[in-house]
Image (tube, rainbow, N blue to C red):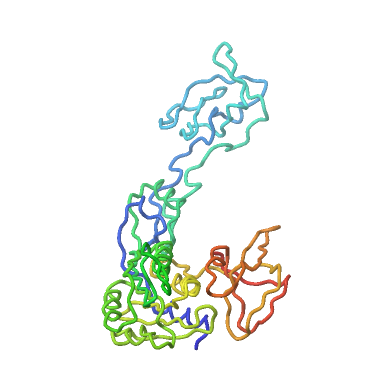
Length: 399
């Protein structure tokens, strides 16, 4: 049996990003850049006004002296008219700054009542140099790397890429992840539930988790605890970029998954981890493709996915940071666990005075899916601890 940390390190050392493809900008959300995205131009690309108001010369802005309005520059126009002493130019947000202007006065700080000669007065404090002017390149400079290789593409990233005129981005390909549930006790969703049977919840839940990562799930269905059918369906799964199996990896008479994987050329990297839940998980590789064999218990399957499969898929998707960061939380009640294994406790959290507070989400037995539903985070409780007391600081993964 290996440690949780060793298991995760072994998994991550056996996976790598897949090939690359150019994808339309609108479809890039959540993908990772497969190139350094370098700005081909400055943002802004010209000096422009940050306010509706008047372009002025600071030297002219005596609150007792009127300024003659000599022109108007809407957004989208070219600023060709220079500001001369004693004048101001009406300007709209985003419009280019005219030559000679060194400040913009917002419209609400100007008295623009009708007077002979189309004059205005600055009625508040005199403007300061450069106020309300967006300078060329102050946001992004030409040649600057705005998205390093391996950066997840967020909505703000799409906004800045669009501002730079990009229509496509080179990203890493999405892995196709086959999902196979095993067990004679399973039936498909929508079928009448018979005594002794269980709905195949793992396939759908794992597919949703795969999709949430950004990968593409491929549900293979249910393989019965029978060698030939298991061999056939695992063979299909090995055609994908990665394979996840659920159940059949313990030591029961019908736990046939590991032997069948070996027959099909899967090299086992490890089996059994010093963690709870998820002790019986196995991991292997077949022709460079990762194979994750998860426990069949739904809570164990989801927690092992979260802690061990998700980082692998995120790395395959090209993200620089594959592992969710641990954050600190203050325990608000005593927690008990058996010493000897890392325990992933389902907890609820709140934020008070900038700090996370954590409580148990309820029943920590692996049969309680509802506790996982109520949890906001997983507390990573060290193997050598048995009793954790209220007020103690613990490490958590936000779900």
